[in-house]
Every structure is written in C-alpha cells, then in structure tokens.
Length: 254
Image (cartoon, rainbow, N blue to C red; front, side, top):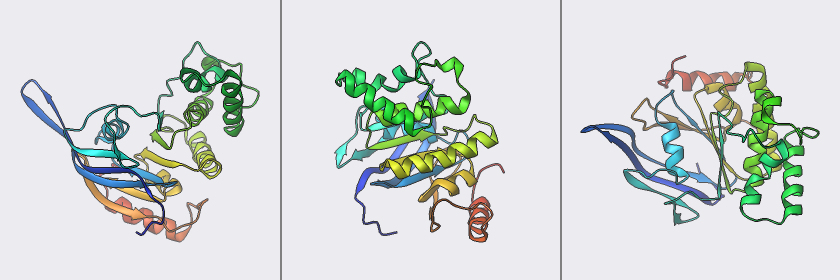
C-alpha cells in the first residue's frame, strides 16, 4: 500500500533469541515493517508469541539479537521519550492521585508546574475523567484505570503511542467502550499508534493496517490493509468477510 505519510518507525530484520543454561529459545524471527506518521497499526498474534518482546525492542527497553529499529531515521538503542507505553496492567502509582499520575511524566522532565497541571487536566478531560482528579487508583474501576494510563501516556507528548493489549483484562462491554474511546482519542490527538492484541475483532475495529504474526517464534504471516471507514460496524458484510479471511489464516485459538 502506498502511503503519503512519512515513516516514523522502521523495524528491520529483527530477530530475538533468549539464551539460558546452554539452551537457545528463539522468540522473534526476522521481522520487518514500518509504522507511518499518524497510522493506527495493529499487531495481531496468539498469546505468548513474542508480541511484548517485540514492543520492548521497538521502544528501546530491550536489545534485539540481530536487526535494527530506527525512529525518524535514527537508531533506537535506549528507551526514548518519543515512545509512550500503555500496558494491560496500567502500572499506576497507587500513592498518587489521578492528577499526579497523569502529570508524573512532565514533572520528571521539569516542565513548568502550571503547564504540568494544565496539560494533565486537558488529557484527564479528554479521557472522560473530569471530576476524578483527586481519586486514587484503588477508587477506580478497571476501565477508569486504563483511561488514566492513556491520559498519562498522552501527557508525555510521545510521537508514537505503544499499547500492549491494554483492554485484555476488561469485561466485554467495558472493552468495547474503551475501543471506541481510543478511536475518538486517536482522532483528536494525531500520532502514530502501535496496538497489540490477540482479538481479531478488536484489530479490525481499530486498525488502519493489521500485521498478523505466527505462533512463537513470531514471524510475519500476512499484512492486511483495512479499507473500511471508522467507526466500523461489526455486522457489516465486508467486515465479517475480512474477519473470516483473517481467522482462517491465523494461529490464534478461536
């Protein structure tokens, strides 16, 4: 597919082999793809296929055994503040309020205090948590905690937002609501998003493209460009047909 957008992140020939007790365990096998500016790219693959390892390599948290990652043409060799992370387990600091969790990143970068608060308030409002600024994580539902995690990631002004199965622990209705919210956030706050899931429907609802990974060691099995406009109807005939095509080509346990 031709993209007018520039390449933000380039993943080239990434292989990862873990070694323990004289034994090698390959996890990623020669993976290459690009993430474009303002693209919503979904990595779809079975559980424990190496998706999280790949995210850690892309974001500079872990070295590849071979291959390279570049961001805006520069090698990524250490954690980069241009990458924001949202995890399934939100990792909120339990002793901090919603406001203080969201402004934590800017505060660590010594951003002016009034700007910390105004920026944090903007993203708290964006994720629909106005009025919860003084609440602590234990006072929030699972979906609300994920909203705080998303607001916190956005408040750091990353160029690339990486979301690692962020809704996997939520009940079906909350998950569906959060998927729609993320589409709304992505429309308001243009940036590249790399979203990881093992749910085909979620991938089809959210993605501009889907990269389908094999079981471990993960390699790229197929890449699908999603031609439907957002928001998408899960009952639409074209949606259902593409869902069938992907499900017949996947190693996911359905």
